[in-house]
Amino acid sequence: MHKRNLLPLLLILSLLASCGQPAARKEDKIIFVSILPLQYFADQISGGLYRSEVMVPPGVGPETYNPTPRQMGNMAKAKAYFANGYLGFEEAYLDKFQSVNPGLLFVNTSEGVDLIHAEADHDGHHHLKGVDPHTWSAPSGARVIARNICKGLSQIDPAHEAQFRDNLQKLLTRIDSVDQVMGTLLNHISSPAFMVFHPALGYLARDYHLEQLSIEFEGKVPTPRHVQQLVEQSKEKKITRIMIQREFDPENAEIIARETGSKVIRIDPLAYNWPEEMISIARKLAGKEE
Ligand SMILES: [Zn+2]
Image: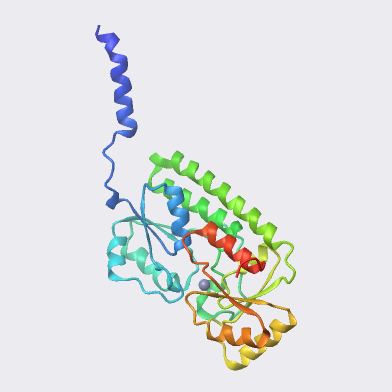
């Protein structure tokens, strides 16, 4: 009689062992990310198991951001920090974050990306170690970033590794379909050169065979002389659209647009919804959306 009842009991016990551990309270399961697109990838992969906090808030540039005391306090409770690896504010703060939080796992999500190395002096201090930091603004970089985030989450939470890998596969499928849509939009573009205020689309330009011209000069607002050069360049390269990010003053972009008869178009490569923003940028570059 005892034996007969043992099997269901064992089953129940094993179920309790696999998923019945008292779940950590959600406020204890915090991860940090540097920028919103990384938050999107982290949220997709964690599937809501972790509350993600973004360091640089919407509408703010990641070049010179200063973390708040509240963020520093929350970081002490976090399990992992997912960095881009090459952003200006990371250059200033990552070492400090690590020394204050020795138990925190730090992940350079750009590790393994085929990096673009900026020419000497290009873009001033913004590009840490001469690397173009905008690895997330192309599907090729996004795939590597997603894999690195999955690896990091599995390291801090091995019990959920299978779930993270499952979510990673779904995300990679979505990235592939974004890549396909972008390729269709950009591979037969009539004028491959485009102008952008802050050079955030270098990886996109490389992957889809476009040419990025930047209004910002060595990381700074351009001088009137440089603006004049850009006017000439954009006439020569038949540029019809000038992209500008929400963090920047559109004045110089508007001067160039007026003098060349081109349009100023808003983009937001730092948006949270990565698939939507990438397709929107591709549509704008292809002249399908104003
Ligand atoms: Zn940037």
